[in-house]
Length: 242
Length: 242
Figure (cartoon, rainbow over the protein chains, first blue to last red):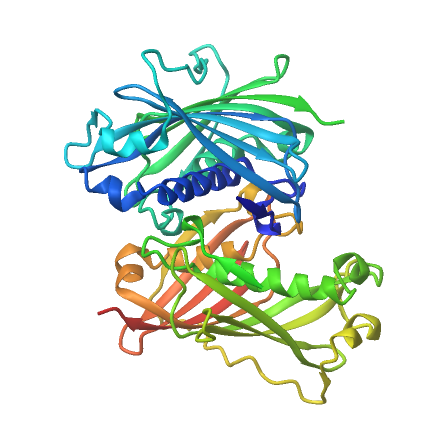
């Protein structure tokens, strides 16, 4: 799938935001699912839906405004409970911008519990059935000794997209905004590992976003929570900009 | 210009947000300017840039997720200080979704003052030179007698796009979010008139968004300000959803 990067998908540096990369990744996977006959309506017939549990985003360089990028995806492997999916973002010559690995589970929409993935919605992808699913990556949590920056964010009505959930891009926005302009302008994101624990919901939730910065290791550890509950955690690895 | 509406450009009802409509409008006008050789880099050579002063957005119905819409624009007319531009959003059969009129001025980037539009950047559009520029619409401000709802919004780093300004869509987000879920789910936006007075800037500004609701007239009056200064005002006309 081709996509031309617009000015409103970019940050002040003219580079696609990482939240938008994930929006585009989901877009191409929805297109693929639809094409092989297991779109959201078919998936819903089995009483559940796909839920993302983690992304590992490796960035060679970020696409810039006006560039036409090529998005591709593969449902790589799965077992009874987990489905592993990969995404590639490349330029027109096949040069890689970013590679994303992700893990999905299937949730029963009535009980809100994770259940076995129905054969009917996974077989059409012809991905490999495996015993051991690859790990998306190991995450280092914020510890009590870490000094943190914290900021509150309100969930807004327009944060919910047509999939009826708070759009994924906002999690990245809340996590990274805390770092502030000076940090974000002088550092380039190279890798981000994010794990989702609990969905953020509109209406009642104020999101508390915390970050601990290890300036030596160029590692930032992130956590977002609502009412004392953990919603998502992430690690980001950075490079200093020249 | 064709555009296929994605899930992340839509609200929970599956309809394109009005902020995204404006993003798409600007996209098509940038494409046109570039095509006739007066893109942003050329415009900047004259020491200034185009600044939007108002939009009048008339909505027949909002495009939905997955629909491929057709965006078009015309630089209709201008005089020494003002340029009047129109946009049409239509479906593949030419049926109109929305019509947008807008007024632009040219601002000297050093003095931040509005100056005469240089001939070199307006002539290539072959629009009509007029004495009297059409009015975009008359706006009814919030009065002291109106009861208002108010909410604060922080300007976030990723609110700035690659044009180096707070992206226009966020003004709509701040203005409409105050209305809340119940109102937004039960009402359909039919017309919105917005006037910009002062740019909202990242870093120091907390945006105060106020709205007064006239439920009889199905009219809402909006105002956003920072530190007591007025940034933008709007009127919205609504229809009750069935």
